[in-house]
Image (cartoon, rainbow, N blue to C red; front, top):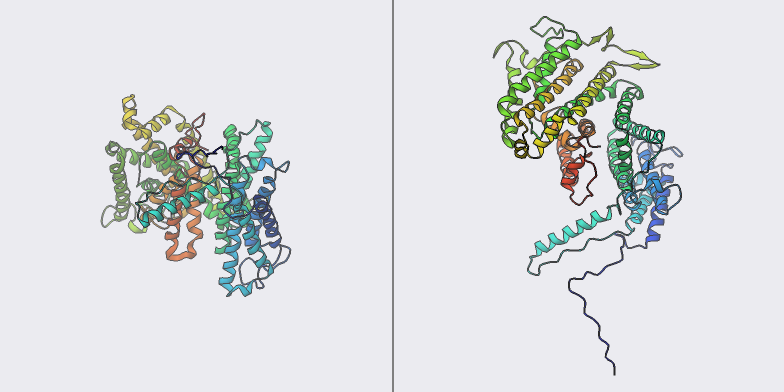
Length: 609
């Protein structure tokens, strides 16, 4: 008689399970449901969603999407393309170099979130679901079905950590919640790294760069031109999840690789695309936002030298912007100025930049021997001292120089070589207003600042800044003069801020101390400038520019929240820093510091993406 025995399982061995989806559906059914739901969502955008035009955007028209329907159409079209690519159709493989599943999940999530936000907004504003037309019900059901189908796609589930039998109920709950969160993150994780971009003909790569820049200009123009609150919130939802979908698909990584091969062409193309922005507007309203964004972005890029490259925490940087603005205003022919002089623009620019540079050296020389929090406190004090001093130089508490709290007012418009920046001009059939004129001028100054940042970042002094930032003690041991290097960074950053301040003085007509606070609801201020650098990506060129644009545009569009504006804005920043601490466009070295499991690059750069 033969006895059959079974070998016992090894205690440390883990059982391998077949990957499954978050929603219990077969993979084929889930993929088909995601595709079908996305197609039906596209169809629903051509139907009426409500019966009355009281809801903004006029969603009562059949056959022509309008308002929020356009955003849902874009998200559904993107989801449809990713769903078709997941079937391996020929000609669509380039869409998903990192795999289609994670991209499809984010695209369907973008469509679902925007669709249901619109349906709930209609119901809330008009008084119930009875105000929905069949198209509204169809988009709600189809977008939900598409998301459910995408979540049914298989993914690699994380293994749960062992639970201590002696844990309390609260500790077990925390353990379960942590594992649940790891599972949710695994659902939206790409299945692999993007494959390298094959070498393409130069003209093809340049065309890809042009198409990417044109897409960026289109998205920015649409976002800044949103006419009502619901549309802007829908734009944020679609743009945020849509960008995540493109990133998970690997398209952002491919575009970055191609752009890195043609850096000079990419930078020139970006400035050319920005120069086309005023021509996309019918009036001067949004050019106003554009010029203020450029002023904010230029100052943030100057701060990026101090914080991003040299690693010096400066909490009073907006004071250098104020020094440049006041210096230029006092010599530009303002009737409020005690100096009866009217310098030409080039001389006023030199005065503003030189004044900020001198203040940067005077403040930096005695304080840059400090480190960390102590340096931050000193710079914060300098920012407040500047504002209080400017407020007191009114002829009563001190000499009559800045006109106190009234500031230097009635600053005349610039006139450069006979070109009046305060008048309208016709260019090729387009009418260019006052703020558009200053937009072009500020774009030139931004280009100068970018050039200075690139050249200094890749120079010997730039490498010394990075060494000081990474480990000052080690850098000093290697022979780097830390005090001299930090003082140069402080002086260069201050002069760039003063350069932007000269234009700000003419754009705003008036320079007052209240414009240069440490923190406030309206940028630029020191807190917002530092947030722009950290949010965009420290040590990069494009990071602070994009971060500054977002930090200026979003609060401007969230004014309908009233007293809750800063709360919502702060909450969004906390979430972003929690889930992407390296910034939107990170330096590759800094990205590896936060994500050690990422693959190390073969070449590290300071300029970033």
